[in-house]
Image 1 (tube, one colour):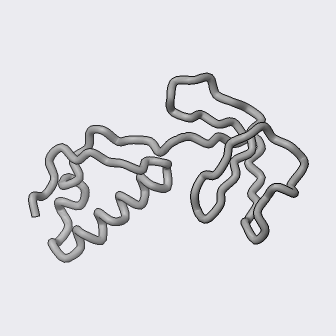
Image 2: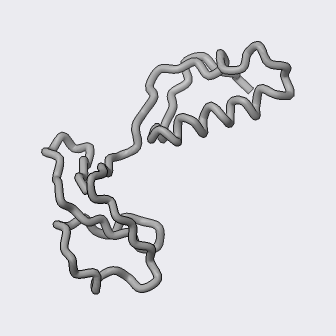
Length: 101
């Protein structure tokens, strides 16, 4: 897989990413030796893919999403909108005009 670390460095192709206990433990050149993979950890084939830090949506107005919906439906709709951001790799959203409560 190609790793883009978010530091401005050159993307690094042909890398393996080791995850242990739900956290990134190591990023190293790919190898066919899987003996260093912790027992019980899932192994995913990321060849042809990219790993990059979560993306930011730095200008949105969340109150506009679902504003025309009845009040009881707005929160569920907003949860769906935020889940959509996450599905696209956006892990942080800056709301420039949302609800104050």
